[in-house]
Length: 319
Ligand SMILES: [Mg+2]
Image (cartoon, rainbow, N blue to C red):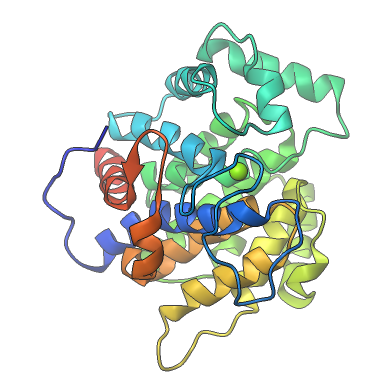
């Protein structure tokens, strides 16, 4: 299956939109071989494959697969949560090689997408201290593409798409903040837009997130483990991005070096790097993804790099 070729969006904006999904996939595939294993030294990660899903080198995992589900709904015209939920259910029934614990608990046996919010809320009610996994943050980037320039719509959509599997307000908040960061990276070329999203959170939660963001700016990226928890995954990705210097002679090389730093954090490596990759790709564009990585990238549903780029452009154009 391939996404039909369309006239490329011209210029920097199109490169950044395409880079959002491509960067997500690049981080995902780069981290896939090190998930819950010994992390590589910083700078040494490669698309080696293996890992929990016995992935091929350059193959992306469930993080990108679920993002593709969201992006395809957005590209079809409107990002309706029910339709995204149906896409998640179809994906689950296709027998993916890896599925997160919380996502599996909600999707397993679900009749359809319309049932997911109640099932996810039920999971949160039954496990109030263990429902803030990173599984909705890792796939949230296409929500930003569908609502570029409209913070209120973006925030509401990020919450509803998170709550299909992850109802915990912490997971929803993280999705809002990361989507705002991606919006600012695409439209304004900034990597610090995450703080703009604080205005969209309830006051007490905004105060707590402001502190978490401040910690991520200072503490070593490697301190944010374990990171199956959405807060530490968020902080690990942000720390890897902010604490990796932008190379003066080759600014776009920041994408490559910060993704290396994200994988070197260790633990849930594909997801931390997928989260980081979406924001880095939104800032530096698809053209910043090294050619060797781009050539290797592939995955469900039979896509390669160019398909992800075209899908991202269609998701943004439909909005
Ligand atoms: Mg994964």
